[in-house]
Image (cartoon, rainbow, N blue to C red; front, side, top):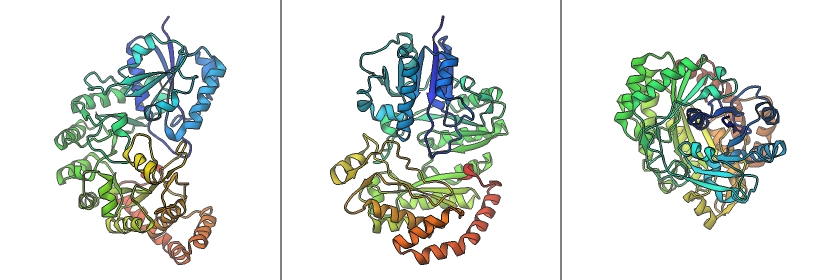
Length: 465
């Protein structure tokens, strides 16, 4: 009798997610190819999924695998507890970004049997074949895969898989760059590996047969544009196949764009793009070590906006070398770029990154577990920073966030916003800015909705931001 495997993706609180977990789908595909029965519960996107205790009782798994994220540590811990209360004899395997970055901490957790460090999909079958309870967690060092035998991701193993709308597509892994704040080099390595665009197109074709409500393909590579020619080939093939599906591409860098790529992107029907700016101060930006320039970002922004594509830009508050005065350069750059939406995100010092090492020497790191760095999309919400220096305290970072939101009018006014706006006005002496923002809000958002309409984003909702 083949083993029954249960794979779990716990929900990250405060984050709306519409993309099912690709890593678990790939693992499910490999396990099913090897003859195992697999069931996946993705609490991050699934609707009406029964509590994990009920899933355990009904499915009765022999092995449980959990994808762990640093922003969901508490719920991950509770999930492990629930499994052990149900049956102490079930081996527990953990993987994902948190397991890779914080494996040394997880090695102290005797409830865990196996920790996958890195890309687990090539190693999962052999481990499950010989799986048993361990006295202390066993770390599986996973070397980067060459993607030569990348399987068809199996979303049919997911709870309510027929409701899946967004299909995550991986056309490459890894990133050759070395941004000081980014953990990709530790998870997927700096060894960039790509798949044949024709095989990616074939994967989409097969997915359409399996997922009746599929409407959007989202490319979620770490860095999809390393080879511009390859990206152009994929875009041309997508256009030629006339899938009648929307397309999104995440993690494109500013230096990936040229006129031809923007033209092809527009032709695919892509209605929005995101640029990671990070910081507007030249000295801070240089220390980020992105391998591109602020001029690259300005040029890419012009190309994208001139093509009539909705542009979002991401900035980070609290990077190494940052300060309140230096951060004002980010606001100035945002106004110059005139993107359609801005994300003012709080810095998270992930283990192993150079930015964390800098903070260990030059500042204070508080508990980053369960910290959500991403800014909300519509509310005027100020999160709690988890790092500070004498040059940029937590209080100053919160003030910087409030200033950025007001100066860029980057929120939708709601009744519940009144209390926070009044508090911001009083606390930071931002009376004029708050008053100005409230007066101009209707004009700003009328223009915003007109822009949404022109870019083909007719209904403003969470997916538009």
